[in-house]
Figure: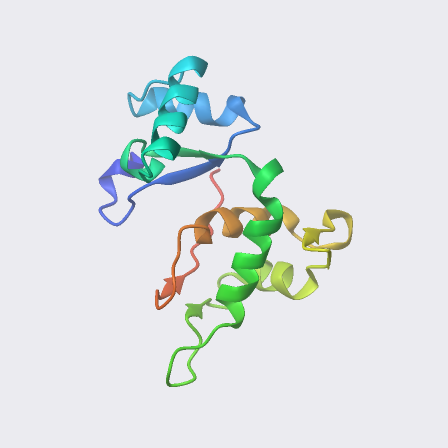
Length: 148
């Protein structure tokens, strides 16, 4: 089954540092993946304040310049509550126990995740990518299912 067949998926976020993963995905979904096109599209989106998600289905995120911001935003989402005091992020702790463990064991120094000291840091990275576009008052349900 192709991911596009799932109606509720609007974008797939992939670490830009790993072309081995994102190039085949872009090919599978008939998206251009040459380096010059990617640079031009990103530059145009920045210049005209266009969300990259509107131009690409497979969205590349560069962790290097964003890792601190991604961690801060993820922490805010997990800790934030709505006006009734309910959490805005819902995680099924039995189904996604590794994500819960990753969140509970996460250690950061100056908003930089200490991966050696954090259990399941790769799952935490995936959740940071998923949460990066979430805004205030959003309801988020974490669904982490590794690709076999």
